[in-house]
Length: 80
Image (cartoon, rainbow, N blue to C red; front, side, top):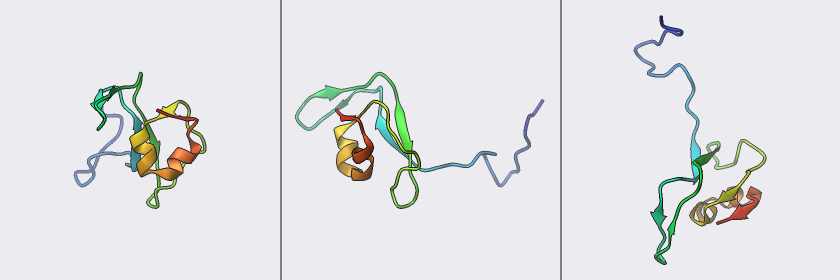
């Protein structure tokens, strides 16, 4: 049983949207030597100009993401 037919030219029947990862579970090392990780993975869908499609962000945003994407940082509740 195939719920949807997929043409050979298109590998996915759903549209792909650009997104920015604002939190990740995998730990990563900052330049000051601190290892940081979050409870969950989270991302924000953005348009081609880098503006958020949504209106609010729940939870913290990584400092590295806030430095690179100031429009996302302005909507963040807290920056970790």
